[in-house]
Length: 144
Picture 1 (cartoon, rainbow, N blue to C red):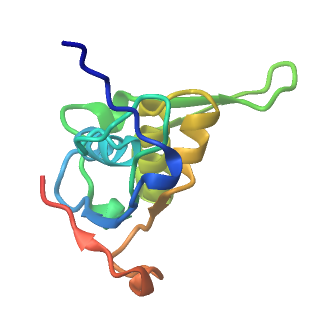
Picture 2: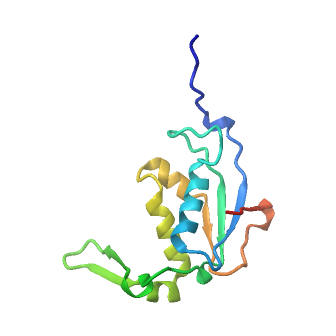
């Protein structure tokens, strides 16, 4: 007897909105949970080459924590594209000034680095406090 592997089609996927509260939770663990939802791995119809994920709203990122000495020792690098244009900022400064950016970059690093990953990243909304502009989508709270 031959069994067929189920392959989801993009037009058959039902996408929902979830809200994730990052307050008092480790940044990386929250980011990995968000990446799982964006990717669609929490659904039984997950297909690697199709965007089966849902929309995610992350709130309270300024209350997210980094364990150990990561606040002082962890450094984010990026390059401007010009010679000698490497920029560095430690996470203590980043979490103070742009905690939403820190969460966004953590999730971005956990998604595929291709066209599919960029499409998944567009379904992410990150806010530094508990106020967000997506009430019309009726998001459901995600517990983890």
